[in-house]
Picture (cartoon, rainbow, N blue to C red):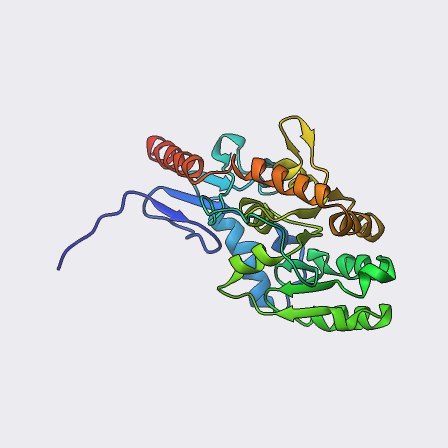
Amino acid sequence: MKLILFHLLHSPCLGAPLWPPVPLVCTIHDLILLDEEIPGGCARLYFKTLIPAGWRQARLVLTDTRFVRRQVIERLRIPAERVVSLPLCSRFEGAQPRAEPPTGQPAFLLVGSVEPRKGFATAIEALALLPAALRQDARLLITGHRTPHAAELISLAQRLGVASQVEFAPYRAEIEQLYRSATALIFPSLAEGFGLPPLEAMSLGTPVLLSDIEVLRETYGEASGRRNPGMFAANGAGALAALMRRVLEEPAFAAELSGFGREIAAVFTRERFAAGLLAAYQRALGSA
């Protein structure tokens, strides 16, 4: 039997060991679970106590953003020198961006688990605020893990008279095609650790409209000294509706968003991520 010796362990998500036998690197994508209500005593103990205890054993903690890095330092009391931010990259890096906007019925795409913090209700409210001539042709496609919150969104859409224009679909392998065929991606989230769907959509040339919260501003708020024109106030259905209308009525604005997004995506490369990861491993081993 061949014996394999490991010199370092990287826990890329939840579940870091409490007593690692080798230097440990952990990735903490966000601390959202620490603020959520978790049913069941055992589940609460695991997510709110044991997982953070495992994170504290790491020689080095990686976060996707500086925003989460600050949270980890302040809330978990992990020394700043042991926490490094390493932004993610798009799996569609290098793919040919779409050459032309899609034709046919306008479809605004939303990607993510169907839960309140994703802000999908704001997108439904914004759809209802569009002028009748635009609203009757447009639709929202929500793709992601469906939870009981979906029933609340369906009820909201019914009250606002847009239920027939809101569609739910499971997250699926052809997500790249959904990005490419969307009029725009809407990302109205209220809490994130990074927010990967906007980067994926941007790397394919799809216009992106996203909420102006701190963590998304860090990654998507600026390019070449220009402020992102596709950002709107969190929970701001009226502001989002105005941007949706501009995307539908102004091809130049949609093209501006597409170009801005490609500029953002060009920064967050696999090469940059790989170099940062290798440096993190070397640093963790060097402190052993």
